[in-house]
Image 1 (cartoon, rainbow, N blue to C red):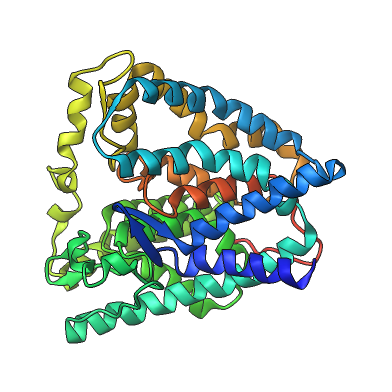
Image 2: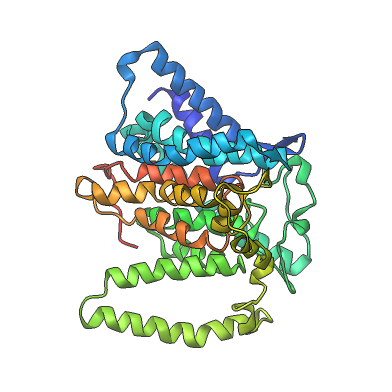
Length: 393
């Protein structure tokens, strides 16, 4: 790997993971450095393939995954041509995040992700990027709590056009401000971290950062993120649920939740009603799509809301929802079919967790959620390198 390629890939990872919101806006559409570099990377890859046909290489499992996604991509692409659009920004985000990201990571970046040098580089940079957003997020949370001020670096930790607007991004939770780190929103930060949780836990050897990771997830003060975190721990418990030790851990976990959850809520000046909000955190209206089910969806595209499945049903109808279920679960379907070919890891848990929490808040149109999801989906089909020994979380 040349020095230029190494530097370029390092910048791509840093701006996607450590500074995902840094950038500017054009006509209200956010253009982040991470996504701009990612687009440029895809151009380099395509030009390289065009110049040297001998470099063309597609992994069978990724192609099968992409083929499983194509019906939804093709269907919604055609349906959008017939719809009016309420927000061009949401349309642009949908096309980039939902339609293009699987193509980019499963096909365009196919050879890069399987490159041994890339994996070594990615593992090291990824590890430090996660550590940075954890520590920065915790420091920012404490600083906001003590001074009632935030730390913003225009073009880097926040979009220049979103400066001094963190208060407007639904981050307040009573007397507290959600932990947002450089992601500007607690829910987006939490969802993205949950996507990376199995991978991060497999390579992070320091308990300090591991503990900090889960404290950061808790301080997002997001019910969706808490549910996703519980699902992650349940997967760990049920994977090891054999013999007396496994059942003992399960019982201890249940006792811990029974006594510690009310205590934690009390410290946040909240009670159990917070966990069972009848208004679903302002999302109750999104369930109205169930009262007006159609085959092809509404005439105007309004975007995809927090509850992804009802939004897809509303925008693209029953056909769209059925195809979307195949689209979002495609990596899992192919992985379980071909599972014996790959090293045993917990990476597929990322996809399971996201698919479940999408019923609450999938943040599907917000940078960088879908980039992370489809990267993990593609990385899932890469055997674990010989020089890295993942630990079980």
